[in-house]
Length: 123
Image (cartoon, rainbow, N blue to C red; front, side, top):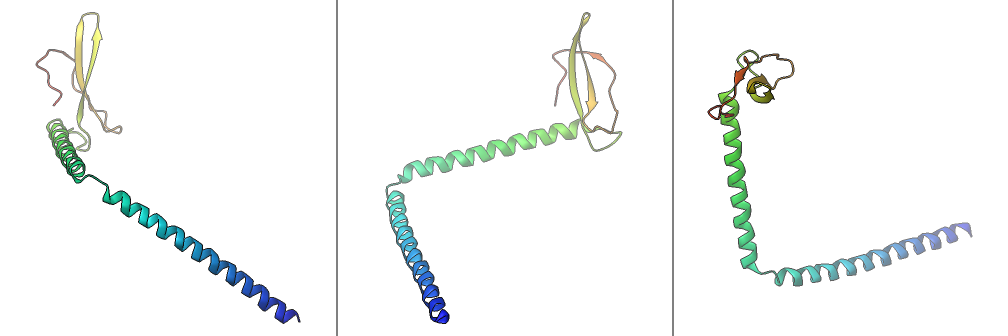
């Protein structure tokens, strides 16, 4: 008797699992059809405009990376070779001054203090 109960109980769980999977499958088919309709309504001219914007953004970021790379190579630290010399500007009573400090925390390289003018370049 207990053997037949187990098989009936197992069949019920298999049947409920099968019904649940069928219901989920129908739900996914409806979702798929809805997404196809949404996709069919997409205006391709807007998509092409977005594609151009993305490409323009990529080019700008590449140009910015190249500029930063050039800047870093111009002011490489000759002591450690890992960091670059960053411009540090500060004001005192007798004027505006600057020096360059290595970005590598282990390196203590620092240029002499000089009077800041507009000719001083960060790059």
